[in-house]
Amino acid sequence: MRGASVLTCVIALLAAGTASAQEWTKSKWGPDDEIGAANYLTPELALKAAQLVKTGKTYALGIPVDASTPAYPPRAFKITVVQPGQAGIPGLGPSKTTYNDDLLEGWVGVGSQLDGLGHIGVEHVYYNGNKLADFADPKGLKKLGIDKVPPIVTRGVLLDMAAHYGTDVVKEGTAFNAKEIEEVAKKQGVEIRQGDVVLFHTGWLSLLGKDDKRYNGGEPGVGVEGAKYLTGKGVVAVGADTWGVEAVPFESQNVFEVHQILLAMNGTYILENMNTAQLAADRAYEFMFVLGQPRFKGAVQSMINPVAIR
Image (cartoon, rainbow, N blue to C red; front, side, top):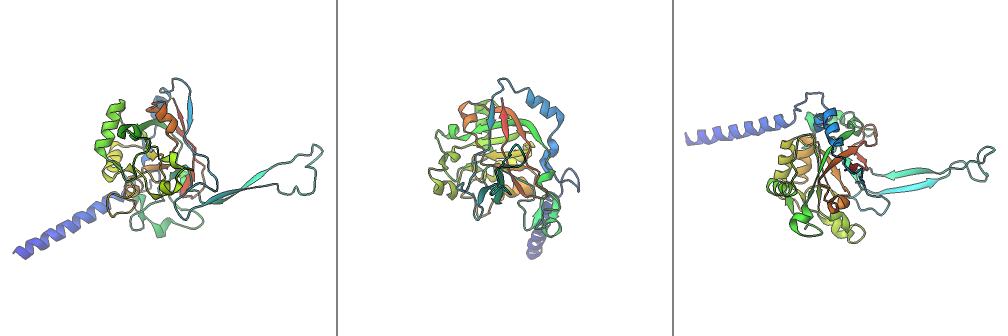
């Protein structure tokens, strides 16, 4: 009987695990949904965000990118400026027009970037149960492409973790979970709401060009419980002034589990390498957030320069 009871428990646990897995692969917005938490966005939220604008001051949240910008390996990036068809001539037409063009070579996951829902999966299963073999193609994703993401115009919230810990640069591996997130939000007098974009300031970007080895070697960031807390609030996106948004070294042996929770399981977008320093300096804890990313058809990610307005 005891053996039968143990077997019954094992079967129940396995069934629960299967049910849980089946549950996260189904979007609350239906089997055809490809935009995840962007469904929370409404004209009403955009109007409310506009009401936060009191001074008109704008903040560029993207960082400049060049060939020296550190990136998650093996990613790299470079620009080549060319003057096509102009060699040996004074210019085009009677007015002698000349021009420069750019050639971009590299990965779009460098610098400030938006992670789309086709970026991270769990054992080759991605947001809304999409299996890699069914939608991934070298010429572009057949589903979940970055071009599907609508303009994100909503309320932005900054959580200044550096101030919370009393340091210029938060130590790598520091995980922000529900307790820390709630403490900082309360201290700053802000409430995290459905449809928000939540950004974390850690001071990590200040290492760029000064200590690139440390910058690449780890980072503070959102913990597993913190990711579940934020998705439970119904936020549209989570970002930080770090290259991966989540705490590295990881809290456990799981690799990029926070990415899995945000992207694959909840359709919540990730904003990496956000330049939050000036927002933190101005104590701009809530603002209008505006993002219209390049619509590379079928792309997994996109370089971005969101704007905060207050």
